[in-house]
Image (cartoon, helix red, strand yellow):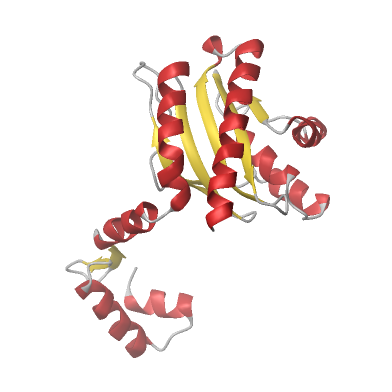
Length: 226
């Protein structure tokens, strides 16, 4: 983007915007090309990495994610919930199998998508009308109906975990369990994604129970100190 477009988007005077951009370029947070167009710079990678390294959840969850990935041959993921806006991947472990979910630390996803989205919907105090509006904007490979999705959200409150069997990605089963604070508020979740052919109903339940045990341990550790 050029200076004028950036200034207009931010409601800044162009000269002020240019001064700020020059500082950000100097810090390598953004870069400019020969046409004076600006884009994100490599300095943001280091900045993001520092933030993740200081994330208590990522640090304490990593050993558990490694175990789940190795034992169950899944991609194990730790996510941070940012309201109803999006989820951010802050920790990750991959199994040594041909399947690998296309996700990296720092990846962002819509908050209401897949198994994690059912958790967000189950533990929020937002009205159903707002959740339904957000749900209808999501992109799934095999989208559930609103009625089915709402029933699955209600089930999360009873079971304490969520399973997406091929809705988000065909042929992939995703299991998610919440990390809740003392006020029953959702801050993080641990997630396991694997091939549906390897995760039948019984195996999903066993894995989900193990993940719940780990989530309770992590919640006690994180919220007792934070």
